[in-house]
Image (tube, rainbow, N blue to C red; front, side, top):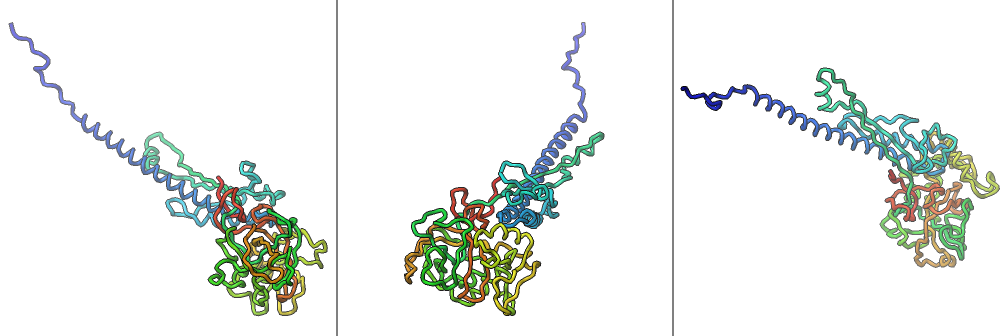
Length: 413
């Protein structure tokens, strides 16, 4: 009898092409993972680009929300768009798009309802938070394009969005003019005896009794800092803190008049002082003549700012002075709402010069230009500079709610 053949005696059939299929599938999966990694990186870059644009927009817009300009939402939106569109998206290929009256919105509270400038027109001065929302549409990633090429596939391109919210927060450093407000006798922080809206009258070279008014001072390191006229003509002295001490200084310098007046857009026939910053958004002056109550001109000032109203000729400075046009003021800035230190000037009344500690920071509104150092100049007290209702903004590092400096733009969301 013959022997039966076992299955192992027969050669196994060859599985031709199996390795090729496995290899192709592995390559496809590998390419898919590579494409996915590239797509994630592409989307991450897009998100980063958009977030930078949103942050820039919100920070710039919030700087205008001082409550000192009835037109502040228009200004804030302009600031935000100008700063935002300087950023580029699409792997730095094109400028980001920020549409007016849509992408920049405002609210009176962080978690409140955000409105466009048109919708918030009736409550513009209450707005304290600026939100910018930006996006990049039609991002066709590598893996998406491969899948979309398959029969029956029809995928929508990706859209990336980013937003940011900013407001004005107290700073830990200040930029201030060398003009100290003198605390009233027996008073204390935060207002040192003053009432919001109160007018203070003084001179560049005031009489000996300066209690309750103001005094020109030297900041620390004065010998290495710009001259007084440079500090007044430009942005003041920065990096100041409550640990600094001050000494008195005469303000009877004719060149100080030139830079003081230019903040109102008032200049001599020879032109604006060299190196001085642009004037305020309005040059409208307030004196006892056109404002008999001699108090609380701030609300009217905010309206004049919105209209870029030029100097009204008060007080009369003579024929050697002329005013700028509304167009010049439209290109101006915050030049009359100014931060100044608060000190105890009592020891300076009789000519003393001992250093005095900075007790706080006040915001005041410059009221009028002068013809010479012997003319009366007016200030309106606006409250502590850290109070958002004061209208003052300075440059410096945000310090959070516990800081005591003037407000600076800060991201909050």
